[in-house]
Length: 339
Image (cartoon, rainbow, N blue to C red; front, side, top):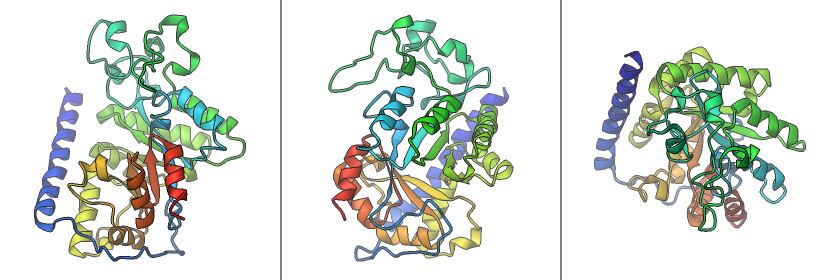
């Protein structure tokens, strides 16, 4: 009953955030000074604010356009090709299983990306209701489409490659750290679990981060306001992205010219959409004036999920701090063309 209540509460909070945004969209238009010039803030203490024209490139869901998302195979692909695809950040999603293990998974259920419906004989196979051992039987590449085909569809049992079984958070990080060849990666980790399960996921993720002394290289996030509040109250030393309500508040203060320090923001970065990911810019969050406002307040701005080359170039020139993309090589080449 408690879990149902928390789910309803999260949905309600999401509607509240959306309702707050509607008046801004209707009354303020696109906004932004088209002649604004990206400003430098060399004294910034925020390690996620990058130099102009040199944004971090983040492999979204560990490079979802190149290999099945959130799998060890995807991480192996990035590491094996790091000379040609030198990404700065690895982004992935985590959730807590029924037995408390932290696994990589974006959707709340296994249904869309794996063969879970077939394996368990039903729909709505929630990550939180299945143990790690049970999930190990699934093919995490079942619905990955590459070059117009589904190369891993139909693999079952021993035919499933080791790197297409469900991946645990600690195993993936250990793999990267052991095989990075001295490169220092940043990690962007989104907690997808909600309610009590979300708070347990945060606790476990904190253990994984601190056991490996990665506090300075991890920024975590969540769309669930109650989980975000838990992150803030229990683990304020870990860098965090703004939740939905904080992001709306930021935009409101920016557009009205208010002093953001009046609300003492405790987040390190905004993670926001642009272009195709923002319904073709029904609201434009990719202009230099807004980025300058964020940087002035010591806040980095990271954009998802940017796969279009022209959008990557625009955001780079505007002063974006990070481009999160399914196609890292494409993003690296587009950024290089701006210099």
